[in-house]
Length: 98
Image (tube, rainbow, N blue to C red; front, side):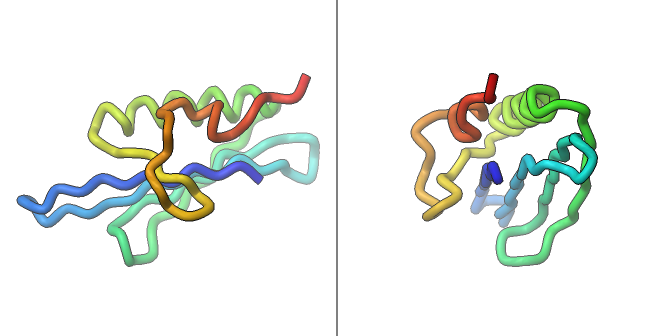
């Protein structure tokens, strides 16, 4: 399973938000991009989006990641929540299999 976790903090406005995405295979040779967002420390809102191919799911995740980064979200490593060394969603998700 592929996972990306991002946070945005603004102490002045008391804003502490998270956004995370998962790409997972479905049962019928399809792929889902699962998105969750909300306030850090609280349960978030979850939505699923379905795609025919892994490449389409990752492309949609890339687009969301770029938009979130423009709004001030910063990726954290999913394994230990350290800042990621890259903003590139495909690097965090790994290479798309041929």
